[in-house]
Each structure stands twice: as C-alpha cells, then as structure tokens.
Image 1: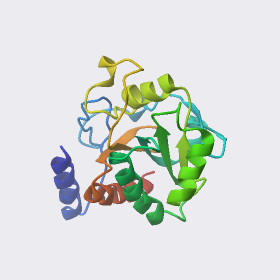
Image 2 (image 1 turned 90 degrees about the vertical axis):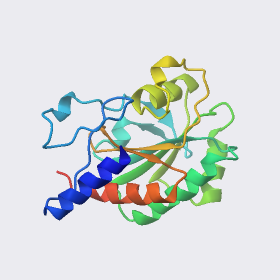
Image 3 (image 1 turned 60 degrees about the vertical axis):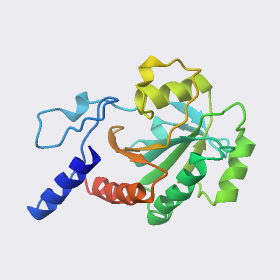
Length: 208
C-alpha cells in the first residue's frame, strides 16, 4: 500500500500536479484518493470526540486540535522497546515544525495507572518535548484504548475484536488533518517513515 502511495505521488509530480494525500475510513487503510474516486469528505470517518489531560494538567480535546494538523501515537514512559524509538524519531517532526503552530503531536499513554501527570511532565522535560506543541495525554484507560482501536485504527488487528482492557502496544503513528480525518499511517520506529511523514505534513499544510 505504502509503495502505491509513493508511486502515485511521484506520478502527480511528474504530471505537474500538486501531490495529494489519501483519506482513510477504516482499519483496512484502503486509500481514497481525492479527484480519483467520488466521495464527500463530510461523510468520511473522523476521530471521535475525546477529553484527556496533558503533562501540564491542562485539558486536551477535539477543540484543542480543531483546525490543526496533528500526529497521534501511543506509548508509555517505562517502555523499553518501541516507544523510545518513536519518541526519538518524532523529535525530528518537532524540529521540522518547531516554529509552526499549525502542527501538534498528541502522545497518549497506554498505562495511565502508572503514568501520572507528574511522570508525563518529567518525561517531557527529560526528552526535550516542547509544550504546547507536543502534548502527553492521560485519562481513563478504556477511553484511551477505545480511541486507539476504533478511531485511529492504531493496531494491526482490528480494534473491534478486542475489549478495552486488552493492552495497546503499537508502533503506528497517525496523521490527522484539520478536520479530523485520517490522512497517513506510519511506523514510528523507522527513520524513513518519519521522513515520509514530514513530507506528508507539508502537503497537508498546502491544502485548502
């Protein structure tokens, strides 16, 4: 799928057209390409309403990211494997858009019982995560897990087959546009995928 997306973008550039990003409406991540398939964006899947708390003890909801492009991922501060790689790679995204308030990063802890607001704040300070662009979010476990699986489709296995207590652990990062639509899926542990993400964010910033 990712190869086809890359080829399509290359073809757009070779034809003198501006590169475009697809829309995704379900866990299969089958792309819907603007201008090539008939669909109305107002009927497509959007990230469901959410209400969490960040590392500065501030509320973060859909209203916080309304009109903004953002990257969403899932982690926990004590993670010894994929999470450190994701954090280090997403620092490249922070650096690339450090002066651009149109972009945010929302990192949701999947261990809210262990990752207190104080712990999230310490983690952000330790790793140089800039506030308010990068928010580390905590809240009810069931709400975080449901959002991860049924709104962001963050896991390889379809989230509707698991309950809200099954542990979420995924390297996927999601790119969301100004209207809450899913526009990109990336493996956050791979540097090449982060390069692609940065390029895709720049494309989204040029959309009307």
